[in-house]
Length: 186
Image (tube, rainbow, N blue to C red; front, side, top):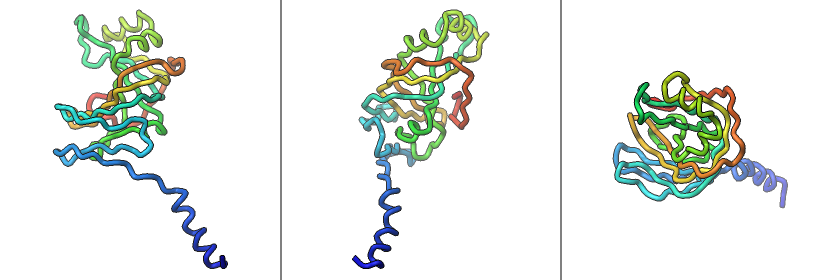
């Protein structure tokens, strides 16, 4: 191979090495919206449900900053609930499906999380959260989740997943998160 041919091949190398597969776009059919599923996503698109939420199958480890709070709680009501949200680390967030048009940062509401709540908070903290006397408990966590969903609510992108197990012992600590998480989040 001559020198010119070698140089031509070398000039193409960054394009081949740096190339990543494009995400798959799954249109919602209305709102000019749909979900983008990265090629290396840990979950696979399953369907849109009757509420236009995108549902995905597969389990993955979700690692990031957790926030326990009591969203929409009223002091004295017995049906107040503690909400667990996790803002995933950037490497994980970049692999998760997200909305194409509604581009808020990813914060994932975790359902079925009673075991996690008991692992990272005391009964006193939970009582204070529910009464409105404690705003939140934060820290870092790595948990196994499934049933990942992407929702549109309050003209914002919202995400949820179901808690399966604790992957690494969580640590309660002051933890900051940056971003625009949409209506009423973080």
